[in-house]
Amino acid sequence: MNQSVRTEHRIGMVGVGLMGHGIAKNILNAGYSLAFLDHPGNQPVDDLLASGAVPCSSAREVAEKADVVLLCVTGSPQVEAVLFEPDGVLEGLAQGTIVVDCSTSLPSSTAKVAARVEEAGGHLVDAAMTRTPKEAEEGRLNLIVGAHETLFEALRPLLASFAEVITHAGAVGSGHTLKLLHNYVSLGFSAVLAEATAASRRAGIDDHAFLEVLTKGGGGGVVLERLRPFIESGDASGFRFSVANAHKDLGYYHTMTDELNTTRGVAGAVAALYAGVEDQTMAVPELIHLLETRTES
Image (tube, rainbow, N blue to C red; front, top):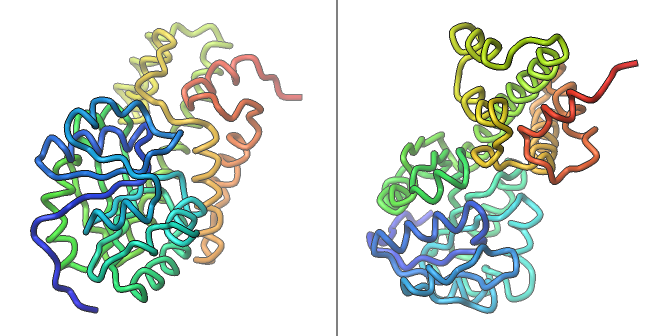
């Protein structure tokens, strides 16, 4: 593949939602131009428009105005749709355009998408995100990137405009693979802590004592600190990740481990917990209240 890439970029973006809005804001703050898809799923964009962002009526138009197109959508079906459907990104793709998929996608789909983007004359990079909308707004996301080394280095200044930690995982698809591994661990820890909190409360243990013991012992860590505000005061705002998204990501993990022919005994129990939640719109910390009222026969 031709590895000649630009050092200055015009940015296009599809997906200005909870995570994408912060990315877009920080890209503009760094001095890049930005065109974005006007879509009902976007967060309010008045601040982006005031900073010079240009709305577009189709993904094709976004691609026509950019040499780097960022996708910040839900998952593999949405990535494939925005790229390949009529008026999609591929119809507006110029030679050498870089497509950066920031979604959480299935690695086997990413491989197929990369091949089609290459056939159209572009390059695909997967740059999966971790952290929350709060860090997105602050320009402090973590990125897990799958890309050829040359593309990775060329994109690093752009990625650094909205990310604090940028890990080069390897070739294309490695970013999405490592993201699914990360999310399985994170969501698994969340499930364990939610069940433990519910059991602690049913046993009459004080929340502060519960948190102190875990924090000073084997239960301390990032996931506990994200759940802490909800345990202490019912505040889920710092962990705005829905059960539906957790269910989707664990389904991708299930498929990936099938394809890798590797064991996932614990993952099956974690996935069953999230799949069994009737209200899939609730945030992950709210599992604690749900489990407090649930009894096992």
